[in-house]
Image 1 (cartoon, one colour):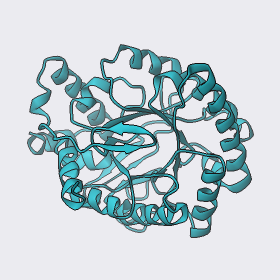
Image 2 (image 1 turned 30 degrees about the vertical axis):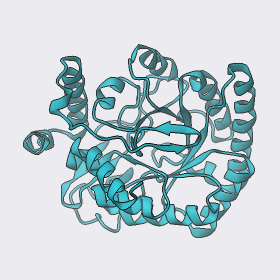
Image 3 (image 1 turned 45 degrees about the vertical axis):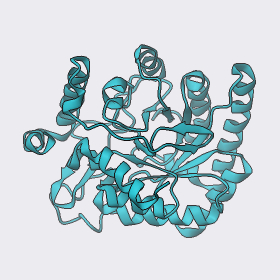
Amino acid sequence: MYPLIRPLLFALDAERAHHLTLESLRFAEACGLAGLCSRRIAALPVKVMGIEFPNPVGLAAGLDKNGDYIDALAALGFGFLEIGTVTPRPQPGNPRPRMFRLPAARAVINRMGFNNHGVDALLANVRRARFRGVLGINIGKNFDTPIERAAEDYLACLRKVYEHASYVTVNISSPNTRNLRQLQQGDELGHLLSALRDERERLADRHGRRVPLALKIAPDLEADQVSAIAELLLVHHIDAVIATNTTTARDAVAELPHGREAGGLSGAPLTAQAQNITAQLVAALGGALPVIGVGGIMCGADAAARMGAGASLVQLYTGLVYAGPALVGDCVEAMRRAHPC
């Protein structure tokens, strides 16, 4: 059905279409009509971070920032969902318009700015959801928290989401929160990871379970930066790395309508860049911890290629805008063909 609906959605403002799509999915799921939106996907189980995933294709953070649509999105056949990015306090994000489609490039530019209702609202939605599958929760800092106090926001979120998450992702790579990517640099990253590691150990003792931590990084990194991040991940016993967030590069889209808008670029122009960072991380880590591939996965072949580069799992977002829910099953089947059991 999606190819029939897409022209209508693309006639709307991108953010309005985003919310209309999610509300429609929620309505369909509540009415028992989720089967009209997706096909049944055969299991392709994989164990990553000590977690059993029914298939390796997940939803990337950013699509459901507040966990409002967990059950509806789960009905599309994802092997796991990641919600957020969530911050300790609610914040409105950047002024609208702040999301732009670039159809000629199969891309999106967004400068949402971690708009969300705050961690308490997200957790209320998690508690209401019926979904009992693998749920990642992506955490960030409030825009007005000074960068030198960023760790306080991440720790506050970690404490609150810990008992409800299958894993927790630390987002230090959005280009839409001022100075956030500064946290990817050596000393600052080491300080943050050390604080998170120590707090996770305390929480594990308190709750009787060790929740894996993943770090989400940017694609706009030099090879020496990737190597330095990999080393810190190992030193601080982080469980996975997610590669990548959106890019600030504009070479591929600068001459297109909206191509020079500020924000993070996602979709097809990011495919090669995210693939390259994934391969670099896999080599730098030497198999010591898993890489989760995201960015520019627009078809099943892209998902299989990301696995071929060494990714253990993949995540989708912008590809869903252009291909619709069928992309989930296409990616699972392509990965099954590329790496049969």
